[in-house]
Each structure stands twice: as structure tokens, then as C-alpha cells.
Amino acid sequence: MNLELLRQVCVTPGAPGFEDKIRDFIIQEVAPLVDAVRVDNMGSVIAIVEGKNTEKTMMAAAHMDEIGFMVRHIDDKGFIKFLPLGGFDAKTLTAQRVIVHGKKDLIGVMGVKPIHVMSPAERTKLPEVTDFFIDLGMSKEEVEKYVSVGDSVTRERDLVEMGDCVNVKSLDNRAGCYVLIEALRAIKASRKKPSCNFVAAFTVQEEVGLRGAQAGTLDIQPDFSIALDVTIACDIPGTPAHDQVSHLGAGAAIKLYDGSVIADRRMVKFMKAMADANKIKWQTEMLPAGGTDAGAMQKFVPGGSIAGAISVPTRNVHQVIEMAHKDDLDASVALLTACAMNVDKWDWSWNSVNECPAEKPAKAAKTAAKPAKAAAKKKKAK
Image 1 (cartoon, helix red, strand yellow):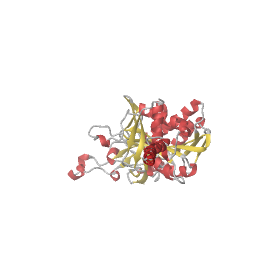
Image 2 (spheres, one colour; image 1 turned 30 degrees about the horizontal axis):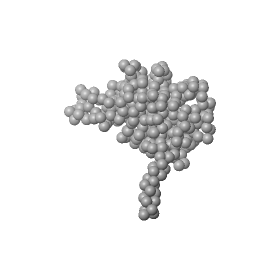
Image 3 (tube, rainbow, N blue to C red; image 1 turned 120 degrees about the horizontal axis):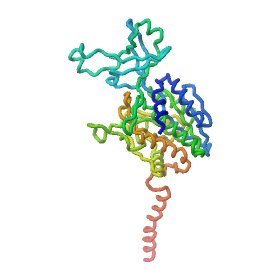
Image 4 (cartoon, rainbow, N blue to C red; image 1 turned 60 degrees about the horizontal axis):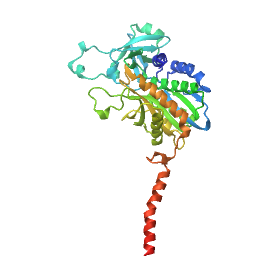
């Protein structure tokens, strides 16, 4: 797999509303792979590959924003208070480095009151985001030369390999961006057109409410929609089997449910069939809370879109030590590529969700009618 691409896409900054640098990087990567690329008014990258059937459109979306912060206040000693952009488990902020993106990038640390001077009650209380501040090691005057209220802040951590896994910040959702870029590369390398128009959308502001996907879907109006994102892998000690959601190394996760979407059963069946036909390792996923761009893509089309999601199982989500298995990333690329190339070969009628093909109920009805006809004939003979 292309580890250098994954590293670069993960470490390039882009908090919600501040996706400029990651957007520029993604455009650079996808421009040679597609027929057209543009940026919409919200800042999402829309990359288009013309398909064999130009009457239908498949939209695959990966959000390129990462959870981060916004500078709220600089106090008299130069310490920064901030607002979160996205959801945080506050205890994971302890002892972390961050990057403040002002007139120039500055490394800071997340500070909090030392345990040595905490009261017994404070020691037993879980920290809150409001307990933290950012320390740049500078005076107020120095800080204000470079930093203003409203500047963005992202977390700092590079990619490392650990066994068969990668560990880095912001796999949520740079893993999805990686999968989408590599699927575009695979389509280009095949020298074949996808089965219908294929629109790769690298969306903004997902972490604060699926906002880029909503605007992008209203614009693109896809017939078929696939979100690319991470999902929780609670395959760790102390977690009951029913709470584990997904497992590292068990393959691409085909979404059945999350807090934003009940995946279309036709899309689920299609994805399973594509995985089996191409010998791609897969697992199913049901995420009790949280959402993905699939929730927006499904409903921001008149009459709805046939929507689902391919998820990369990830441990330690929304921390700087997110971990994914290399094989799961490869499987996700292969599954998305197979879906893009074969969507026209599938029966998308509602009858297709039945275990039996559409013609079988008719045959069953015909078979059931035979005994009734025989009985009527026998009665007439009597």
C-alpha cells in the first residue's frame, strides 16, 4: 500500500472550516486521475470520472476535515483558551502537543492544572475540555504577533507502523480520503470507464454536522451514494462481543446502521456480492451512535439516494493514536473500486432485497396453484 500517501494525507492539517491545506493536497493527488475537478462554495473537492452510463451517478464521499479547535481567547500571560471543532473525549487531551495555525504554525502543548495541587475532589473528577489551555511558551505580546482569535488549532502526531497496522492522528477521516484517492487510481489504471458517472467528493465540516455532504449532495443529486469513513473497533480487552462494532484485520466494514443512516438493504446486498465475487475480505458494522456523510447523501436528493458506507475499522477513534490494519485499508479500496465498476450489473429494484430472485415468487405462486387446480378437476370428475 502507499504508506507515504497515507502519512501525508493524515498529517496535513484541516480542522472543520479550515480545510485549505488538505484540500490543496487532495486536488494535487486526484487531478491526474479524473476527467474534471472543482471546488464548491463550501470548499468540498468534487472530482468527476465519466462513466459508460452517463444517465446515472454514483457519489462516493470522504470527509477531509479532522477534529480540531479554534482560538477563543489569549490571556494576559499568553495562554490560549479554545473552542472544540468536533467531538472530544477530554481526558485524551492530557499531555498532547498541538499546532496553532496563525500567521505561522506554532507548536503548543495542552496544559491543565497539575495533579500535585489538585484537591482530593478534583483528582477524582474527569477533566472537561474547558479545563485545558494551550501553552506556546511565549508572552502575550509574542503570541499576538502570530495568533488571533479565530485561528485554527490541530493535533500533532506523525504516522508509525506497528506490526500489520498504522498508527497516527486523524485516520478519522483521512483513511477514507486515502481509500477514495486509491480507488480513483485503480479506476484510472484499469483503462476502463466506471459503469456510471463516478463523483468522488472530499467533503468539509463533517465533524460538525455533515455540512459539506449536505451541500454537495444537493448539487450532485446522486442515484447511488457510498460514504467512506472509519468506524469504531472495540476489539479490545474488557469489551463485550456485542459492543465491539468491528475488528481490525477482518476486512472492509459494510455498514448496516449508524446514528445518521440505516443503510439501504439493496446497497448492503450489492456490496456483499461485490466483495464475495472479488474475494475481498469483509465484515458488517452497526455503530450505535455517531454518523457519517451517508446520512446526508441518502436524504438530500428528491426521493432519496440508494446509500450505504464502507468503513475502515479503527481503534482509539478521536485520539492521536488511531490505529487501522493495512489489510482493511486495501480491502476498502478494492471494494469501492468493484462497486464503481459494476453498479450497472445489479438489480436495484426493491424485489432484489428478497433472498430469492424476483421471478421466484411468481414461480412459487404458480406451483401453489397446481394442487388447487388438481382438486378442482377431481371434484368436477366426481
